[in-house]
Image 1 (cartoon, helix red, strand yellow):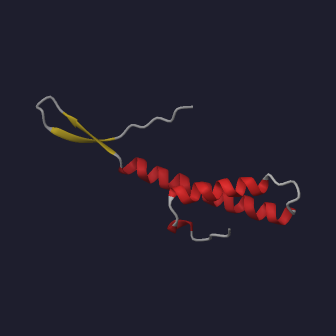
Image 2 (tube, rainbow, N blue to C red):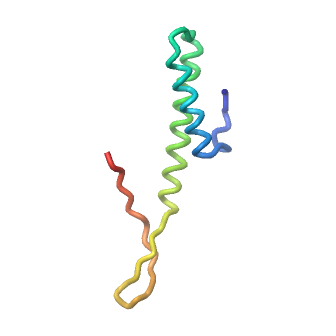
Image 3 (cartoon, one colour):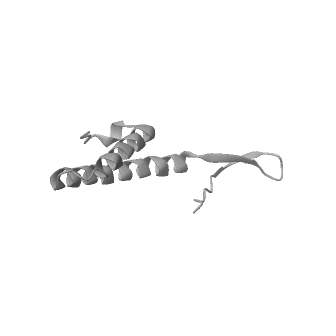
Length: 82
């Protein structure tokens, strides 16, 4: 499961890997060293996936018409629902 090159994986792959890490960490008989290694890998994947989402948000734009009927590009205002 070691994947040091997080830059090459997609969001979907990263989330799937995180799900697998969580399942492994939920095992009661996992050695401490393995648990710490998995946790560290999971933190890296969370940061990678968060970066992908942040980049996607920056790239999203909404086209709106102004008063003269011209299209203008504005950055999307995405608010997270709690």
